Amino acid sequence: MTRQSPKEKLIAELLEQFRISGSQNHAFDNVAAGRLGINRTDLACLDVITRAGPVTAGEIAGEAGLTTGAVTAVVDRLERAGYARRARDDEDRRRVMIEATPEFLRRAKPIWGPTAAAWQRMIRRYTTQELALMVEMMRAGNEIEARHIDRLRVEDET
Image 1: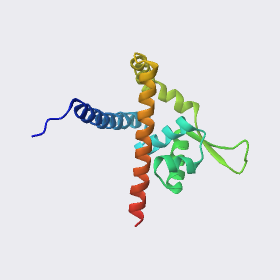
Image 2: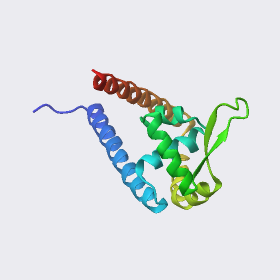
Image 3: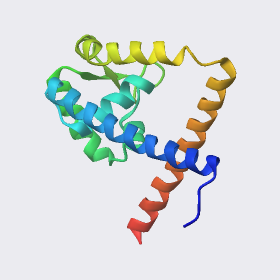
Image 4: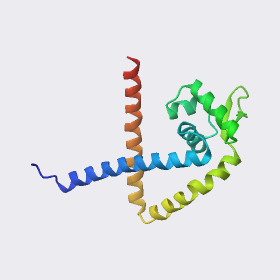
């Protein structure tokens, strides 16, 4: 049996922690979606809307991995729930933008606010250089994920 070097052990532990983090994010989102009375797909689209919004249905579809037709149904449900609304783009009146409503932001605050505050407190213990390294690693990881999402989509088309 080959012994792992200290670096190999840390790499394995880091990858394991990313998997655990993904599972915990998934579990948190399940509880949050239930509390809001929506499904996980709708919540994922709300995440895109609140992070990047206002956005078009096409932008939501691209980030959430859905068709524009599916996003239309999502936005319809989110409008009925009072969590999102369609608005004309001020610069191009033909374009429809999707934005979160004040009602969603009000309902979201007690769900994500305490978690965000805890993360802020934890993150502040790191140096600027350490934070820059973490941001670099997360960006690189997100690029890897995006490439492999594209790879799977291409494989599905063949």
